[in-house]
Length: 75
Image (cartoon, rainbow, N blue to C red):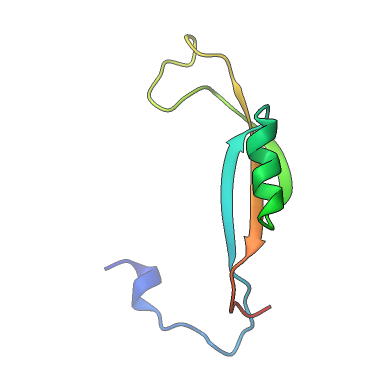
């Protein structure tokens, strides 16, 4: 059992839950789709290629992070 699962939830502290997803930064149509569904662009990050591939074989990818509040979450 992990420490996180062993502790009871503290429900006295307000919290906000967000749904988040990443997409390739140069995919404008997917970014437009996400923004049209209420997701907000939170920034871009450079990642060293695709998972499982040697870094020297794949150029770095720019990824965009999108988030939106989850319905019913406390803010």
